[in-house]
Image (tube, rainbow, N blue to C red):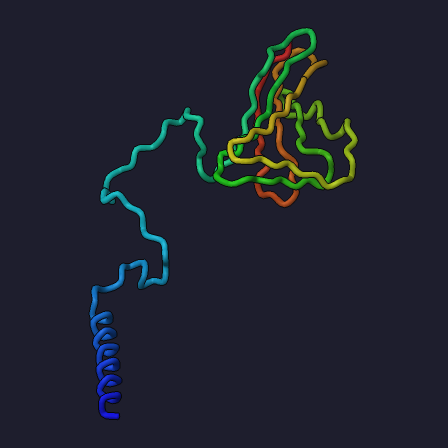
Amino acid sequence: MPKRTNVLNVILLTICISIAITGCGKTDSPNQSEGREEPVMGDGKQNQKKDRPEEDQNGIVAGSIESSIKVLEPQNEKGILFRYELKNQTEKEKVFQFPTSQKFDYVIKDKNGKIVYQYSKNHMFMQVLSSLKLKQADTFKQDILVNDLEAGTYELEVWLTPKGETEDYRQKITFNWN
């Protein structure tokens, strides 16, 4: 029996020493002490200014959905063709929900700001829920043909009509009708 007690004492002493040595090891990293598992990334140059990508690059800019409008075809016998674009420059897929089949609207204003035409007033839309899914770097394109105006200066204002969004991605462009 004394032999057995000695073996148990040796095992118990080994466990206690192991716990004491492990507990006295180096301290936790800041991430471990805060309960985070992933490491903090850095390049050791904390106070140096980072280079920013050029404005005209076509890469993804985290956190922004960019809208634009441009003249696709200048005035001809058919009218002026504009293109409204919405590009997902975020790192996530963006889904817009619409209460009807209408996804966008636009108005044409004269030089005094008076609305001379509104798209939604002349069209019927199905009362059906619809959506628009934009994956990363995808673009929604909508061509708009403007015609039958009197000579003068006008402003075309286009926007998206999603439900539950704080942003409508409104764009304006001024043009002359001859």
